[in-house]
Image (cartoon, rainbow, N blue to C red; front, side, top):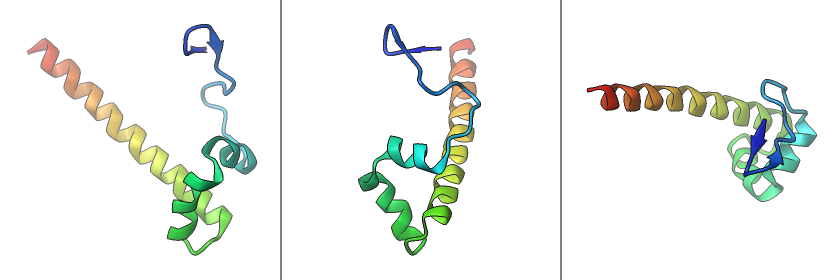
Length: 73
């Protein structure tokens, strides 16, 4: 899979990330929002991040369906 022109995607689709890789990709500053929400527990914060990513993916799927419906109208 390619992203950003000719740059290969370093994360194959469907491959779960380790907690360390997730923290590296997010950065500690961004991850702090999740840590604060769960009282500072890294594992619970990672679970919250994964839940949030799943909700966002589900919502985006519905937006795509709406876009197709509007184009076909």
